[in-house]
Amino acid sequence: MFLDEPMQLRPLALFLALALPALPAVAEQASPAPAATAPAAADVQGLLATLKMDEILAVMREEGLKYGQSLEDDMFPGRGGDRWQAVVGLIYDTERMRATFAKGLEGELGASPEVIAAAQAFFGSATGQEALKLEIEARRALLDNAAEDAAKIAWEDMLAKGDARVARIERFAAANDLIESNVMGALNANLAFYRGLAETGAFPEEMTEDQMLADVWGQEAEVRADTEDWLFPFLSLAYQPMSDADLDAYIAFSETPAGKALNAALFAAFDKVFTEISQDLGRGVARQLQGEDI
Image (cartoon, rainbow, N blue to C red; front, top):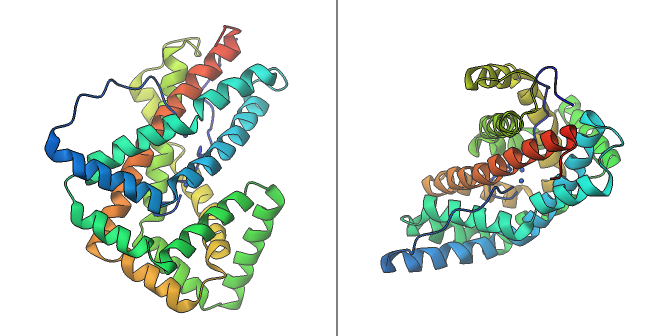
């Protein structure tokens, strides 16, 4: 079975930098790092622990398994079964995701010990640890469709009432460039998905890179709307228990040069994870459609 035409893809996930918003193709053989970079690598590993990255990746795996089911429902309903779920489970392997993310973050921050130190200082504090905990809990809660609907209604109520929290949430999103960065990340992931489909022969005729790019860019408005539709309810749910003072401290850190550098590095590292995952999903979907062994 082939795809008659490109499909409209929803974002695979949102990369919520500093907290969260995946899969690997075969990992590259790493070359030995110069001795001078070893301390930086160790510092990045410590930062991953402070940022609760293992907990975040566990939630991302749950999101991935759910997304895999939605792909089956959309593209080969009722024909994936245990075999497809096993493929998706291998793609969203937390150890492989962690290795890809860590390698990406080391590449971004390995020469910036001052950024790592500032991130450790904030996220290692009681306020930073509480923020991370709340973000992870909210993201896990939104795996439930009813909870997601309730969060959207609550956000709409806040907007309608002119709740003072709205301005803080919007300032937080702006400080961390959450809309633009998530939109670009989702479009990159969708392009990688197309590439995986194309290289595995899912289209009846060859689909060029220019055609794939044009189709993905045609999704930009919908991806942006989906991003905003999910992001603000998530943020309002996550930070609802935080005091204004603690949320203001989080925003203040995000607006510092170190906070912005960390944010950009996290998005870049997540982008590597999600583009790899997306391309593997494209390959897997194509083979499933063709009835091949995956």
